[in-house]
Length: 197
Image (cartoon, rainbow, N blue to C red; front, side, top):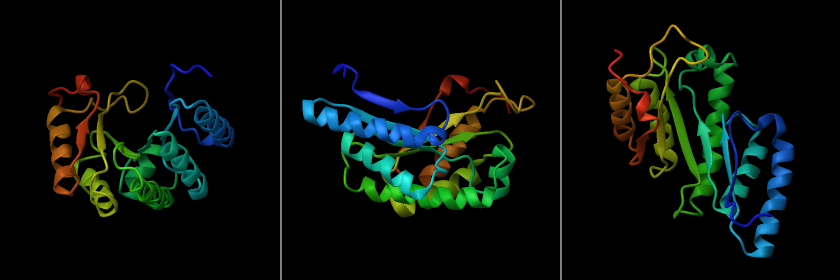
């Protein structure tokens, strides 16, 4: 195990399809790091739709290792969620609520580094400040210190008929996060923002 690699991150597509193997490997990494007294953080980027027991195990591995769980929440309204992803929006939003709560509850055990981070992709015409406010309002009931990362959309792959996210859209979304009661809102990939609409 190379000691100068401090973090093992599962991202670039949801780890769900290979989660059993990722958890098994992560347990070994955490055990070995503890034995050698070195830092090996386990971090996840997920759509948040895995089984609740699996989410709890993922969060525990991140908690004990100093890593994070970043949940990408597509939309609050089930119909919008379904339009963006093709999965059953009602079931997805309910699962997200439960899984975010699981991680938020564990986050109270470690305050110095946030365990839970929620990202929201600002898709023009779909994910507006009202969608963002509803997601943030729910999260604020769990833990008002949870960081929210608002991401600019760019039509590189799908939805090519949409413009990239505008600066005003991102600003309104950030204001909605604060209005909902969350203190920590960040705009990621700002270089994609422009005066598109």
